[in-house]
Length: 318
Ligand SMILES: C[S@@+](CC[C@H](N)C(=O)[O-])C[C@H]1O[C@@H](n2cnc3c(N)ncnc32)[C@H](O)[C@@H]1O
Image (cartoon, rainbow, N blue to C red):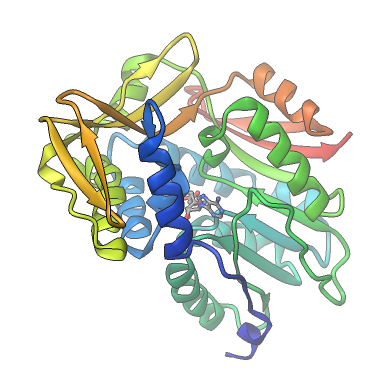
């Protein structure tokens, strides 16, 4: 396990941060919980289960695009590349790149620390010659990533349409900070495209109820980590598509009038009251190119599936 000696553990995703953000968010009107807290160990496993759902076209479409275009991507990344992945999750998609690009090093960054370390250990066993430097960190911050000896160009990888979880202004600022962390290097990014609202609605309202369980995991996590007393059955998953704002909006709706205690504080919910938990913005190729330009990036190449569901874009510093 030599490769993992370079681990850079940062104190992120701590219970004290969660307690502060949760009590702040529940004091806000309308109530809200930041979506990064979906991802503890259980949340990461539930997200992996979402990726396997028949309704969730995003993962299989993006994976097919990566497999089909890995050779072109390898040519763009060049020799002795260093790949930095933001919100790395299960590390399944990056294997398609590692096998073809054969980079010198790989830095997966994720806020879900235990899960990141577990999946990185498995990857390290499969790729013993790869310099692996997992970072438990919040990718929205300006991250100082130490130089990797022998690497020529640093390239970012940001799949999963995670960019959609940020409002456009915040997304532009975050892409700008990522560009700085990459020392101006290119970014390969997955973008979910505007499409038939029914298709989008199905993807976030699966028949098996896995997305609902993922959404409720915020409350389950508060019970586990903070000793809160949310009754999970008293909150319903609600995830409509807003076609004007072009985003899925995810909520937990209180089914009854109720009170919940979190960190010794009481929070009251009306019957029907919403807690906003996530947005997932959708883009057209043009609206995404405009967003990238605000961050100092030019969209040089993009690949889409035949149905135009999803786009994999290669951004270069303008
Ligand atoms: C939508 S999932 C995508 C996972 C994977 N990249 C994929 O394509 O399947 C978002 C990932 O980003 C991580 N994440 C979410 N917010 C984060 C943040 N602020 N900082 C670091 N990681 C974050 C989550 O833990 C999760 O692994």
